Image (cartoon, rainbow, N blue to C red; front, side):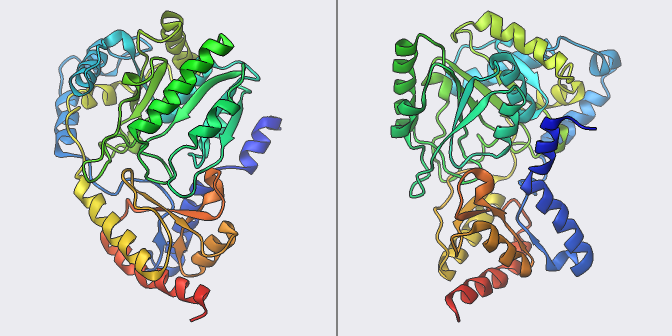
Length: 396
């Protein structure tokens, strides 16, 4: 018999993944070209050529033990140094290898840092809408996820609600920008307000409150928008990064944590993160992936492909009468459902072979998420279905 905790987790398993599996079944039944699957944030853009070259170069290295053998739980020293140098060059920081822990993607990194920081009963604050798996990650360590309601006008965090949500049990505030599911980039002014509140509350409560900045979409930003680097704004920031989106490597599960020397209890946290990496069963991030990404840190996917999708889908949906803000980053549109019940709306969309994820999955009912990291031609084929759905709701 499985554990009671897993019974609940299985029952509430990822809606996104369930829809992805449903899409495969529908494709087999109706033909892939007749199913419009916007459910999963699975990059459609190929990895940069530099990634392919780096994989071949690493695989042909004569020191095969170095490539495939164990290393420090925190990762290869030279990889961590290369990542620290790259961050320093881009953001004016002063990191070195002792500030980097290689992780099994951003999800692995968040579980490592939550294992490191959280005691049962601790509280983790997130701003709605948020990536639904946060709830599972936090509950892994018997902590509590505290949700701050969404500003459904701008989808910037409701900073005015933050101070009242902070308690002596608050250990972490999660920031995810560019945001999944909205594509919104949190402004520098917003982040500075959050930092000021946290600094004041730390003094008042006599505790340490860490921002965990979840950054898998950092490089996916459009129209020259600034994505502020939060460690330069708030001292007690830990960054979780993934190469899944920037290099189109979601299945390779490679990322890192940045644990700045300036944070409270740095030495203990860095040491504990290495131990957590081991006892959670990762042992270390995949060696081959560590080595090849370190050779293409300045590479990136062709963002114009996503931008072209963004422009087509956003402009078309607006012309049909849908309401949504134009995303500044990531590859999602967060669209207001055409009825109050977002799950019912998603079910009705499914009748037209449109697979959309209900906003309630992200703590924000009344909306649906559309992942536009798909083939451009699929978007074009899907537009008549979106238009017909809107006309049905209008009674046309």
